[in-house]
Length: 233
Image (cartoon, rainbow, N blue to C red; front, side):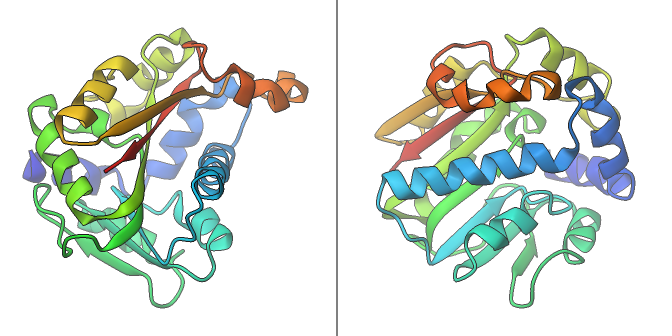
């Protein structure tokens, strides 16, 4: 898988941003909206759990879509990013602040010591990874988390018809296999996460953005375009 995935995303690295923008056109939003809401959620998770992260890992950092809002939200944190695509990381370096640790890795072993990170964050990465490899990789994520840390994962919701259509129309998602939230929860638990919280996100397109303050209260409803899982070691 690592060589296949790295080749696939190396090929799309220079056009990833344009492809992403085209695939989400039905939402009426720019890609930055989807990056920002996730980091806003991440801040909320940290606040609710009393975490002031000193070290954060962006697992599957890609071209750095999450990096700029993450840097703004956590200006004092040491942020690291890993990805199997060297070409994507070259694009990511253009938005990374000085001192950001970006590493190309083998897709199997996270190149950090045990209990390194207070937070591990990943956004729409696991649907590109073969299912047979998920539990082992999730175990690696758990290994590098501190005992009081949190793993925050986002994935597309296959129960949302517009999400499925967007994925089908996106070239870099041609080999994606969407994962239902209950199955992803099961995989986290199989990897040793003791507690997993689930919330569905992104219910309203831009035309109905006035209703977005209601989204957090709607998060138990399994109809949002994406879902968030928060795993505790």
